Length: 339
Image: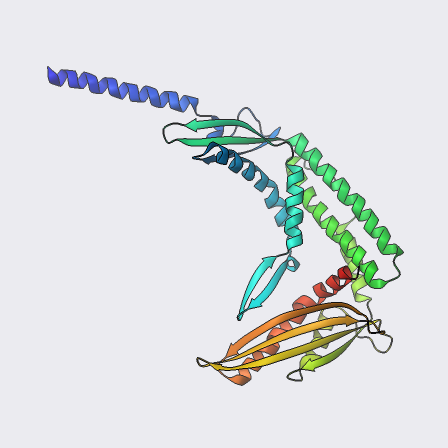
């Protein structure tokens, strides 16, 4: 008799568990594990987040929505020139340009205005909170177009300023700023084409290749002579001239508008644990004929080798790499700082 009762009780418990599981499954929103039926893809951008805390789940959902835009903008705007190399204790570290990161944050903040938490759900079986963030595609597109119009207005102003400037560096600074503004707009356009189901977005008024070509021509038109100040090993002049040629800057004589002065200072740190160490500093400055300095740049250097001669060779190799990679970006930074 007890056996029969136990079987009946077990059957009832199993049935109750199945019923509860079915109720739980029925109450789970579709967006927790798939698409949100109430917010079709052709009308909305959606993202979900989960956490043991309801507010954290909402924050994560909104954060994941923002990442949709950040990814597109970051991939579209990041180039090799945005990566800065720093040498500390003989090791190189890489950091992204801070200005670019700030622009990405500014753009995404404006683009996602109007995003909201549309739904929440609590999975009582594991006490996990879920949240769904929703952004209307049309509203996001309008936000992006507003931002793109602002960038276009600023680009027009910078191009006008560039044409009006008689100072070549100030003119180049404005042109460089126009290029950067259109880089940002180009990134928004690529993202807008994803949001805009027609895939058209909002075509730019200026051609980026033309703007970059104009800036490149302006850089190469600079009449720059070279000069070497401190030179620890007597090889800097040749390396500097080679880097100038590789960067596209023609050599200039007595009629040069500027002189690029390079210095290499090194310190022999001696033999440490079987390695010869050298520390150095490479610096360049752009100088007018009247002696006015229009820009400076310096890079720390540190190398080691088993032989002293090899250490000297390695530090000169590092000097050549820095100048070949950084000379043109440095010139642009001089133009920008000329304001």
